[in-house]
Length: 250
Image (cartoon, rainbow, N blue to C red; front, side, top):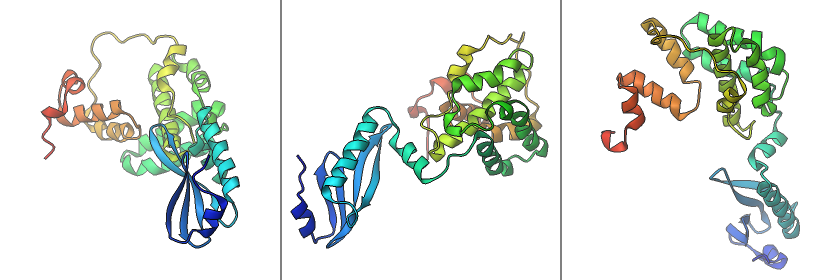
């Protein structure tokens, strides 16, 4: 049973927020002027979702809309992403990749790297997933992109995987996807790449700026840890095992 009644709603005059319970809120701006909000939790974060104007939606309609959204959220639907889809068109993977490239290329001083970033996607990713909506690109589709070159061109395959991940993480940050790139799970569906014998070769120092720029296109704790390691020349074990008490943030 809600806390508000239709009569109360009509008689409210003082601006403010009035709760009906279960996250349904009336934001009143003045007598007869306001809007309905639904407050929900999604992935540990609180969101206020607009349900419509008080002039257009009454108390009963607002309760029904709130009930419907709560039911969808409970069933696992990402309400935030779905409502964003309704407001704006979700781009294809190819369009999203072009947008990511435009946003990041200013940070890549090496023009060759700028071109290579798109060339690898044009050669290997776009033919298979370029026309897919970025919200629909999941593990099996990415695996199908990588499988033909996973063993024959391992370094290229890893770069393609990283760049697909960068595009999907961007799409997640923009609200076009319900989840980040499923990059970790993809390796389980691919054969193990042959290991190189001996230590990895050191990266030429002149290539480090471009590597840092590409590294920053990803969104992950591992990326931050690797960048910290590069900037401080710390050992990998020290970075993985460090605690906040070891840092002087001032």
